Each structure stands twice: as C-alpha cells, then as structure tokens.
Image (tube, rainbow, N blue to C red; front, side):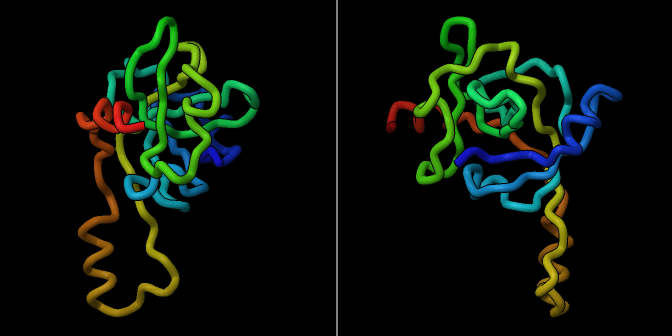
Length: 145
C-alpha cells in the first residue's frame, strides 16, 4: 500500500516552493508515521537517499512519499522504509523523473490524544519537529531486496 498524502497537498503545491503534506499509511515506518506532516520543497533536486513526494506511476492523481534510492535510466528507483508495506518500485519499476515532485525537508509529528502524562508530553516535545535526513544506507537496502 503506498504512503498517501492528503488532497490538500496538491492544492498547496502550485503556490509556493515549500508546502505541507500530511502522511497517511505505513510504508515509510519507522521514518514517517500516519498523521505526520511534512514540509516539502517542491521542485528540489533529488539525491539518492532523499525522502521524496511523487505521483504514483499508475494512478497519477495519487501522491505518495518514498525514499529515492538510485537513478535508473530516466527515472528513480524508490522504496518505502517499511519493507513489508509494499507499493514502491518493486511493484511498479522506476518512476520517471517528471513524476518526482519534491523533497521532504522537515517532519512534524502531532501530539496523539492519549499522550497526556508529563513524561509523554516532554518526550513528544523533544521529537515533534525533526529534519528528514538523507539515508546513505539506502543502496544497501536495495541490494538486500
């Protein structure tokens, strides 16, 4: 199942070079979780290991978030960080460059309703806003598949 982004993402994309995107689905766990909000740099240059937002090759009205692993021909081989979720290049092959829309820069994880204890709130506050880092081990994961 591909990691989907909210429909608000598509409307916000055309106006500014940076915009929010809400994540739904499990394919990028543990890096991203359902409900996380990304700050996406639309049109940014993509490098191997970057978390990217792209159009699904077979359902182009669906935006997904994956990790760009390597260039293959005129496109990108993309994988989810959760190998058990599927919905990546192992299913649909390399994604053409024109379908890769932007690169995730920051991740905001909202406070869950059950997090009320002082310890849980402090733990959330320390990890709620994080940069989305390039994973240099992405090529090792590709070889392992």
